[in-house]
Image 1 (cartoon, rainbow, N blue to C red):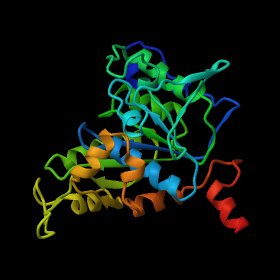
Image 2 (cartoon, rainbow, N blue to C red; image 1 turned 120 degrees about the vertical axis):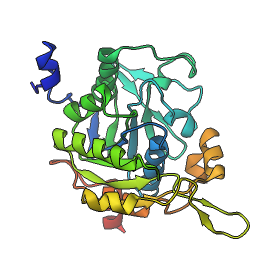
Image 3 (cartoon, one colour; image 1 turned 30 degrees about the vertical axis):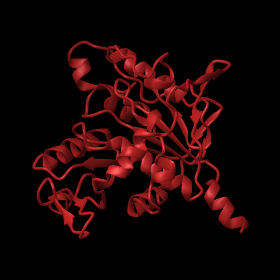
Image 4 (cartoon, rainbow, N blue to C red; image 1 turned 180 degrees about the vertical axis):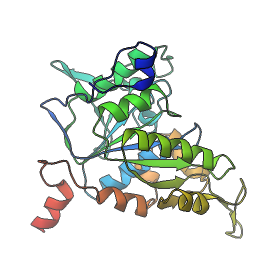
Length: 287
């Protein structure tokens, strides 16, 4: 059993080292998308990475760990759909291009129903989404994290075999604090940070094409250097893409090569020991 020093000090129970993977699942790599605060676009980055990896021939799943504020199903065109079962296991819903998704919104009668669960129940949902869901063989499982570094983040990093973290920030004075929180948690959990993605970096003038930094000059390079991290991308404010996400059409609307550096860094992660080759690698070999 892994010990959480805060829980132990309070006389609470310890957390399991890792949730078990069922016989119908094989996630070769697990990547968490995290931020130290809310409202920076983690779900957009998660969805975009899933689409880009899928376009490159990989099989991809999204575990929506933002239990109380899930947005992945709507973004992936799954509004009104509900997950079904296979024996004792849940079956993830599958998007139009083959991306698998498991989310609390797929278990609710109505997607607008609030999730009024306490911490232990939410942690149980994460276990259910991992251990009791039939993911099948997938090259990448992306975990869309909730805001901050609280109970759910602790559960994910203690109990899932996370290979790396993508940190999402915004170009504001808070960026250093946001990154510092993520870096400190990653160090405590012994999970490497793959790099930083800055969302809402700028807006492009539709008339002259000039990039306008609405939130001031970016501090991303300075912060990345401070913590010796890679910059994996800067995303603009794009009203058309925002509308597409609201309409459940991110797979069709996302521009090609949207996050090339971040996608390549994810592809460089070796598969878990004993896992077979990726679908894309097999296709390349056959070609």
